[in-house]
Figure 1 (cartoon, rainbow, N blue to C red):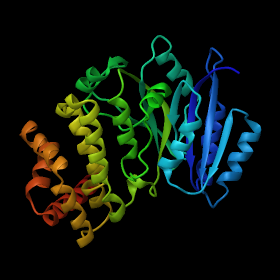
Figure 2 (figure 1 turned 30 degrees about the vertical axis):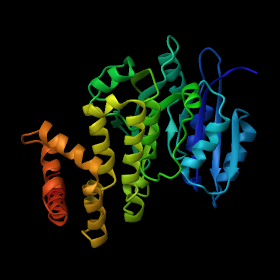
Figure 3 (figure 1 turned 180 degrees about the horizontal axis):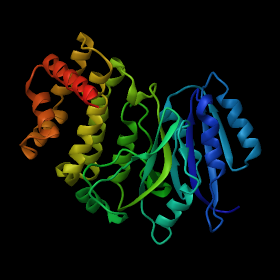
Figure 4 (figure 1 turned 180 degrees about the vertical axis):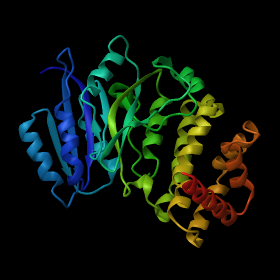
Length: 341
């Protein structure tokens, strides 16, 4: 049996509408040296035709492995795939996203002269099914493509990236790194930070290896107060791993900005776009603002970015004004921006 170069792990839950495009992108993958590729497709208790589509695909493409389990959540589904993966590298792909035809070759080219622990790449953004060549997700600002020691990478990049990454499986296996199944928000970022703090080298390529679908129903686009309370648990999980594995990272601006961004993505900046102010939203935002780790990050950016700019202005508001007033001000700002577009 040929060695498997990369394992694509795809958690799937009620994704039949978008799944075929993802599967087609998997079947188009190849590497010039003929290395084997496997696709681990995890059905997480879907109630639509997702499982049927996965089984049909596996019948046609023997590189596919289907795992069928009761619904346990996306992190448990990813972990189920990770436990059976055989690839030198693993890549986690959601069932509504899809790879570029040359994704595997790009990853292989980055890794063939060295063995980075993590590969970070860019992606296209697909808006409601319409591909726009002008839209792309740039994961890293401040660096050019290349291989970096982990702390060198952290010192050069503006903010530690959330997506899109391939991980050396040996790194994950040796350090027993899995997704934290207790986290429902920001678990991808928490996984990356855990892996990063155990790594020696990170590679970045500015090439785009996948198409990321932006849907109104995605977690990043919906408002759920009870769910989003767990973002506090996520940043404490991240902080605990960093303090244990790589405490020097705590002082890096890129680390602090990563925390700042991941929290705000699921709190005030997300909510002001979607909902009028409510008591429940106010309670959530007050809880986040009182959190010790988040407050330290806010204070850092107030001191570092003193002046008239977005980060300073937002941090100042979030730290000192009543939550309800901040909320209304940001809602007004958004309306003005919409009118000026």
